Length: 339
Image (cartoon, rainbow, N blue to C red; front, side, top):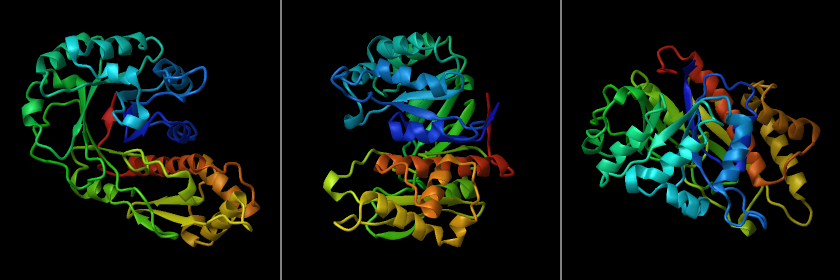
């Protein structure tokens, strides 16, 4: 199968829901960063085995790349153990092999430490039973010293991750002979100070102008690359609607505060109705899209099915990934990866 779009997602409920509700997943290869599961009385450490079991419904039969998160708020001691380089990243190798039977198309990321080249090489050797591996490295750095230790590049997908520095990909690196090359970045802002406006997403434009002949396109699914949790008292209801076409990628957004006269539900309805006045949003006409459907229910019928920020994050990301996949599939000359 050919893959055209490579979104980097954390295994949080909002991002997983956005992916799982896509009406068409053909041509999309997600890059998952494993996070701990939801902590509860019966799950006090946020077991990663529980999280892997949660993934089975949507990822059991599709190709996906599995990495791990390194963000402190998203990991636990189990994930920390997977990052230990001893004996060729033994813990990671054993973990991946344990789940190979459950996820037949799993593509493991190579854990990399420039100070442990012997362990990196041993890890790759011990993952030899996997037909394809992935390697994720910072895209803005000079990596040639690191890349020189990688043998058998023909089975490795190289992911160069620029995070929020979308236009700082270091083009001097030796990237020859890898199975595939993925550019990964996000221009989505960390915070939005204004009550309404338009976010210009520059990563697609940069990719199309500079990288499409060599690199496959990846981003963070219309999310800031690093988790950012709003303080509860400062949360304001907000809806974001992405609009993607050949010329631009933008997000229209609006907020509405709650008060003694405006409930959370009413705030969301007001936001949706105001956004629906935008002719560009109305012209999207993607009625088979899960996220857009919930937005239209609010805008046209005053019906709200989710009042939490995470729900509307799922709506935004679902619309964005659907539109971006269609765009990348239909672009003449854009790089794809066949697996």
